[in-house]
Length: 128
Image 1 (cartoon, rainbow, N blue to C red):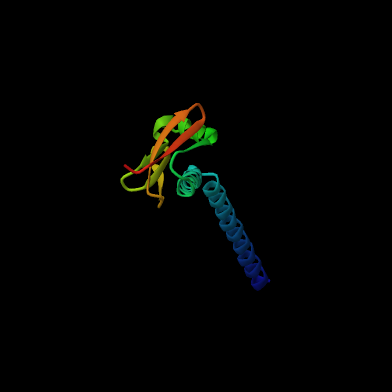
Image 2 (image 1 turned 135 degrees about the vertical axis):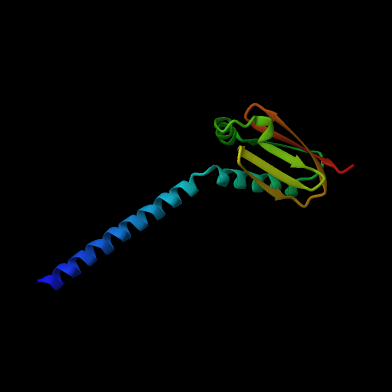
């Protein structure tokens, strides 16, 4: 009887540890999937790709309502959410105080950006 009880206790502990491990993994995946970092990364890459695909004298309007709402919850102004560094050809997106994502573009243009309501307005100009 003692051997059967030992096997039962070992199996119960094994099952409990597996359930705890997989629960922690699922919680981690859920939190990573809904984090602000993914929104920053996606937005920076999309803006950089739009800049690369555009020609001089192009005006692009991008609806960033969801990103602006997230950034306001985290205490970031709309004007500081998207920054475009023309010297280094970088798009920097910041939606929280402790994280940001930057992505480079290759098109040799000058980009002017402004905020109009929930839209980011990009004006693509020739490099000076």
